[in-house]
Image (cartoon, rainbow, N blue to C red; front, side, top):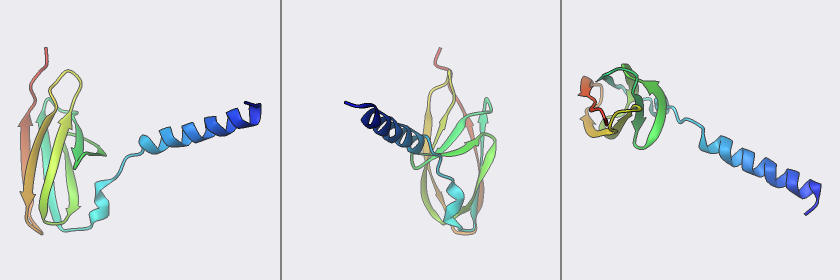
Length: 103
């Protein structure tokens, strides 16, 4: 394998890694519903339908359409916590979650 091929494959690998690390913002939905998510302790990463929102608790998910959403909270040293919320169009709700320590 010559140096040109090695550089080509290295560039492909870098592009794949960068794409895998990309966060997908939830705000592209443009609905009217809002969910405020709090956790104890604070600072848990918020995932919606398996995708990172780039947000940590406490924070709000805004511009949601009505419907069901699978929410996961992840914080090092604590069990991942998942739940499903059903929110109506133009609704606003608050969810508070007590995270459980692993150790």
